[in-house]
Length: 119
Image (cartoon, rainbow, N blue to C red):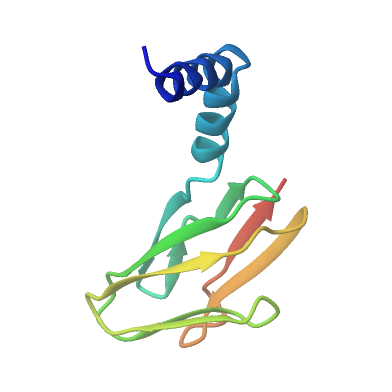
């Protein structure tokens, strides 16, 4: 058996034996983007309250099911997405600190609100 093969086999066995493979897989799974659906319909954002984990990057998929345009936004997070009727899109939100974040449909600000709760 060549020395390089034996050395490679030893390193592979060591890698698995110390659990590095499992740790690496766990890190990959925890870094996957959590995705949440959001619908805007008749000037309302559904769900009105969305709880997400703090400290994790998330993705919101947004669909406008209303007859007119919508503008999904949160100015403090610098998120703004304009959707024509029937359109779908998404926004990625970087890890949030624990707290509440208010989103509105700018075209219907008085009756549209979604509270994103990071905890």
